[in-house]
Length: 141
Image (tube, rainbow, N blue to C red; front, side, top):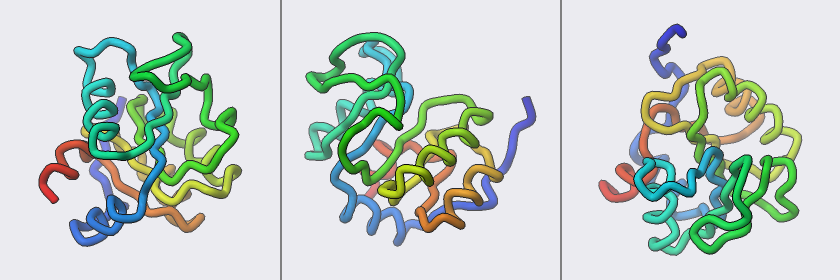
C-alpha cells in the first residue's frame, strides 16, 4: 500500500462550518466493539447531538441506532460520511456519495487518504476532509 499526502483537504474555518451545518453523519465501518476508534468517535459525536448512522456488515444496532449494510441503503438524507475504511475503498464510497446527491461532507479518518476519491467528491460539490479525526477536530473547535 502506498501512503499518500492529502492534497485535497479542508481548512480550520471550513471544519467549523462543517460542524455547524451537519446534523446526520453516516459512520462507515462503525464497529460494535467499544474499544475501537470508530466506536469511540461515533459515541462522542452522538453525545454532541449529531445523529449517527452506523454502516457495518453485521449487527442490527450499534449505539442504539439501526445498522445499515451500505451507504446506498440509508432511506433518508445524510449530511456527512465519516469513513473508517482502507484508502482503496474510498473511490467506491465517493461514487455512492455522488449517486446519493445528499452528502455534503466526505470525511476520511486519521491516516486514510485517497486523493483521487477526494478530488472526485470535491468536484461533485462536497467538502472534503482527509486524514483527520472528526472527534479530535470537533473538540479543538
